[in-house]
Length: 511
Length: 49
View 1: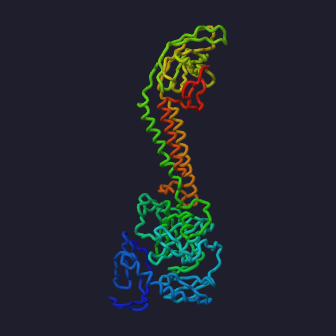
View 2: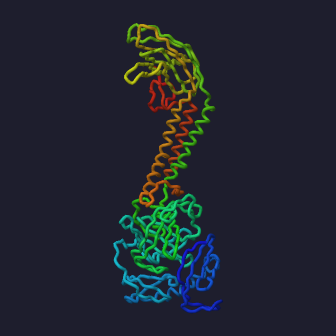
View 3: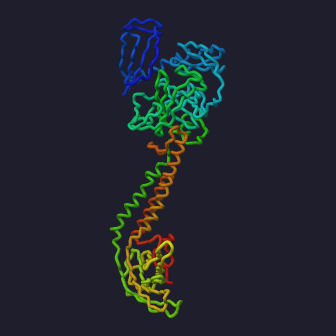
C-alpha cells in the first residue's frame, strides 16, 4: 500500500456509540493508505502507539445506498439554496452542499468558504491574464456514455509556466450524487473526460528511467504510458463550488503521462498524491453531451488525441498481403515457363547500309493465355544490330511486332575499362491467340558487308514480375501515406512535450 | 466510407492482377502498339506493321 494523503484530522461531530472517548475538536495526525483492488487503510496517530485501520473502498451501490442517496440530498439542497453571500448578500445555491468546501459568489466574484453550511467571506478573486470565458456554463448538465448525467458545478482556469510562457486551460468540475465527482478538461480546444484513479494501481514501468524523481513511463490497467509533461500547475481563476478548499494561486506538481486516447495525470502536493485518467473526447461528443453547437475546433494535436488513420496501415495492408498470396499461388496455377523456339538464323550481307535483310524461322506452336518473350543475341562488338521481329500467325496471317535492338560497346578511358549494352536483348508481349507461328526477322546492322548470325528464342509463361511490381506500388501508396501521416501526427503530438519523443506505442482508436 | 472505398479499390487491383496472371496479360509490354515502359494492358493482336 502507498500513502496517498497525510494531514491533520479534527473530530467535528459524532452520533451513536463510539468505541473510544471522543473529544470534540480534538486533532490528530493521520495518513491514508491505498492499495490494489481498492484496498484502503488509515494510520491514526492520535493514539499511542498509532492505530492502523485496514479495509477496502466501496461505492454507495456496494452497500445498497445507491438509490437512497439522491433522495436524501434533495431537502439539503433546498435548505442550501437559501444561503446568501456574506459579502454582497446575493443568493447562492449549492449543488453539493454536503461536499462543498469553497464556492464563488456569482454576484460579487468573491471566494467563500463553506463550513458546515455556513458561508464566510475569504477574498475577492483577483483579475488574471487567463481567458475566464468558459465555453460551457456552470450549471449545465451533460449526458455521458452509459446515460450518466453530470452537472457542471465549478470551473477552474489553471496554468503552467514553461520556459517563461504561460499555458492556460479550463477544467470543469462535474457532479452526480450517485457516482461523485468527475472532471471535463478543455485545453487548446481538446477535451478530456477525467476520472479518479487508485494511486496504487499505477506503477513505474520496467525499463523506465527516473527523470527529476518521477518515472518516464508508468503502467496502469495493462497499458504503458509515456511521460509528456512535468510542471507546477497553478489555479488562476475559479467559478462555482468545489469539494476542496480551492484558492487562487494554489499550486500542485502536475505530471502527465499519455497513451492515446488516455492521459494519466498525477498531482502532487506536500500532503497528497492524486492520480486521474482522462479519456479524449471529440468536439462532437462534447457538443452532443451538452446539447451545444459550434464549440471551437482544436488547431493542434492533443497530447492524448487518438490517431484516426490507423486503418490505412493496418487493414489497409490486407490487399497488399493478398497480392503476395495471389502471386505465389499463380505460379503453379498458370504453369512454368517453356521454350517454344530456339534457332540460329543468319541474315545475309546487306546490299547497302539502309536496306534491311529478312529471314524467317521455323514454325512453332503458341499456346493461349501465356505471355510471349522473344530473345535475340548477336555477336556484336562495338557495333549494333537493329531487329524488327514479327510473330506471324500462319492461319490468320495476323502479325505482332516487336523491336529488339542489340548493341554492345566497350573501351577504356581515364576511369578504366567500360562497356555499354550487351550482346543479347529481349522483348515480351501479352498472350497471343493459340496457333502455329513463324518469326520474320528484319535487321540492319553496322558492318553491312558481313552476314549477321542471330540466335532467336521464344518462350512462354515467363515470370517477369512487372505486373506484380505495378500492383505492389499501387497498393502500397495508401499504407505508406498512412504511415507518413501517423509519423507527422506523432511528431506534432510530441513537439509540445517537455520530453519530445515521437516514438509512440499508443493503441490509437480507429474512429 | 473512404475505408470501404479503399478496400474495394484494393480488391479491384487484386482482381486485375489475378486476371493478368491467368490470361497472360503484360501491363508493360513491347508489342507493336504497346512499347515497353508504357503502362498498357495488351490483350491480343493489334494487326501487322
